[in-house]
Length: 157
Image 1: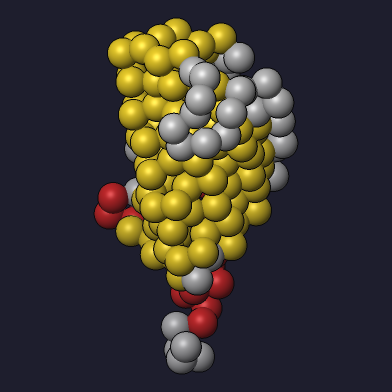
Image 2: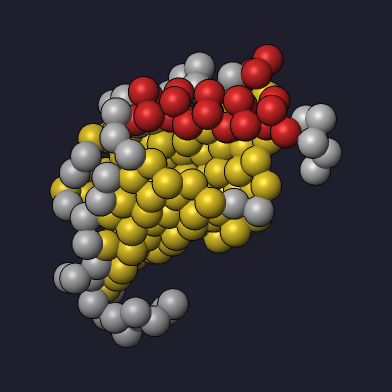
């Protein structure tokens, strides 16, 4: 890093942090191998070993993109999300934090009472999901001995 660009990078970091705090309305912690800010598109992209923590949640992913125009987060690659006492794994998550809705692709959920796998899940609100091609079991095997399977399901958690 050159010292010539240092003031710009410091200012950019504070602008991003300030905007994140305003949007989330609570403290947020982000760590990544690299960050890119695209003012033209009003987005920040964190890449490589990304960790984000806010409120009582935390997430790991290969890449997380904050899109301020629609107040969303898009996480891709080896996504792990801890929320409400459950661990969720997915290939991709899109989350709109204003209304707490979103979409999860190729999902596995580990909670106190069950193991779930779904091709796709849509978060309707904080506690309700719609799922496509879902398997629910009390067994953590990829092909559980006993399970409930459905083409679609509504989950209240």
